[in-house]
Image (cartoon, rainbow, N blue to C red; front, side, top):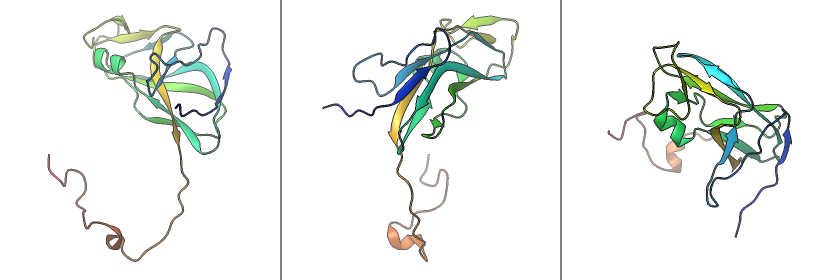
Length: 163
């Protein structure tokens, strides 16, 4: 039994590609660059996707990295997972950060392997990220005297349970 949500989509650039699942049981749909973009070492670039969405109230779209890009290049999505809210109607853009620290004059593509240090050319039509729909419940705050009365006494912060 499929769990589906209907989301309206507009292709807003010539040659834009509809997001699509690579395999039947994938959680994320691949999304594509709508134009060529050069990303030099240390730069963050907003890569246009050529899509606009009408996400239903109570949902969001999360933009996440593709594992192949993360493992084979030095490109990262710095705000991952990024959230596209249900009220947003602009073009979906993907922030890509090139964490290379040298060789800005050397240009690589997504098909180059080995995490090359240098600039990256993203070509129009290449898969650059994935999107996953998620339900978003609204919080109703209930103020209490002490939250320890509602579960464990655990505290300590980051790394408090060990490494």
